[in-house]
Length: 557
Image (cartoon, rainbow, N blue to C red; front, side, top):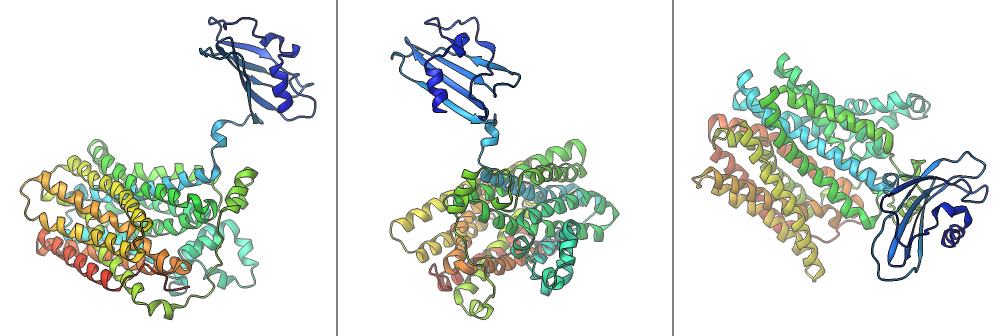
């Protein structure tokens, strides 16, 4: 490269056709064609050169593509640009790209993986929230009462809950999730000396650790996408078939989070992990926004089945790209550049795998139970608003379908902003000397009492605009929980944070199962005020439990 730089700087006779014989470039000829086959000595690799010359107050920029001598030369572009400079000729700048690599191929591969995970979570919530909008015309067509609607909405969480169960407790589910592994590597499993043991070691993150995050996440996206496409067909066949399809969809989405965590833990250095996780989780908020915004338009133009067909088909596009670009680990990627592989491997912190889990010790700790109970109380209100908000806007506030979908976007946008704001506030408080315990209690208290306050105001407001504002503020303050209980797993037991997440998330999913179903029952026999009172009561219980028993200190090594 240095030889080439000197070569170009001296304007060798090899470049007699590039010699700037004018002080100003010919503006009538911006691009010229030339042939350069003698740029490099033999046996050197191909390079592309872009070099600039500052001379007599003007800048000359050339782009030269060359290859080895002895090979039929290829045409190359020489581009010239003129920019007024004050200095005389002072330097030549040469930049090279080996083997003609395009700029998009130089994009860090680890961030390609992050963007693909972001896209998966975008599709995840798009496919999850579309039922919240489509349930309105579906209820009218099939004559479903609120109890039935609540049953349908909660059936998704039945499947989601199954993925939180350890396989020995649910062996049938183990075989379901081993299906792609059996198809892709049946011979490897059959040759194992302990095939049954291999079958039982896959659940949540353990599945991803065993068969690879790429396979598990890809399988999950395909699984829930197929279930989404089958939803209209199942609904027309009968309610039991629809419930089964919704359960299958929950199973597919249930493996997304542990698989994503498995992949990013291997691909992303610790110094970039917060940014990467923030981007991926923001895909969930954006997925809700996208699903709620586009569903009314599709329903109005093409009917409610079009929502499921269009959203579900996007999963096949994602899966095709995922198969081509993704790998479970940088060690498995044959196309990863050596310098990036070195960066990932040297700046990542490897953790010793957990071989035995001290269940008795974990469950004997009060902060663990505070985390589990608080997660349940928090998710009750969150999942009710996620699944029932469009119905509330339509039936109580009298918005039409399109207005309901668009106005449901506002709380999710508020959550995206508040989650990042809360994270910044929490980090600032810790950096200024406030204890982690105090910060976690403050943030989660806001995450509980904020939604409780704004939900109580819904029964007192007189205008739809104020009701929408209360909903947005409720969800916005709810997002402060990201810096409260959702950050507490790493605080109290970093080695067993995955186990704690499984425990508390199971409680949270149970809140989704019971909360969405109970809401339908309450609406059939009561009112929306009763629904909000239950949520507010649980928020208050969570506030008391969290402030009495939680901690930000490590309690398990």
